[in-house]
Length: 113
Image (tube, rainbow, N blue to C red):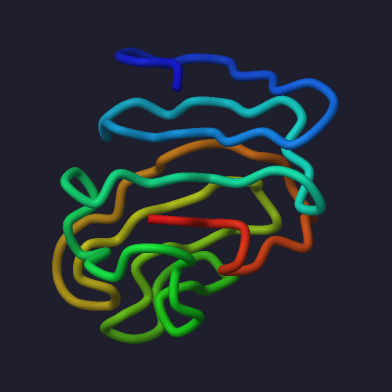
């Protein structure tokens, strides 16, 4: 957890949890590893995420933007940016959460609420 502001986060070797408890700043994770690491999103901040535990698969999408109403977390594998969209493909802007690296085999199982 980098706290307030824009941060560069490095977990190092082993299992790491990168916790996000604010929006409005885009942190960079320098060494996210889908085999070992986890992204944790605070549901009191990311309020569309109302299921605690592993992010449900229907709330996760790989692409540039949400495709349906419940695509709340989007990973752009080309740019490496993780995005939160509180209303999926509805009106309203999505916000970038973090830059985690491009081309990762990221899945919903890498994200917990």
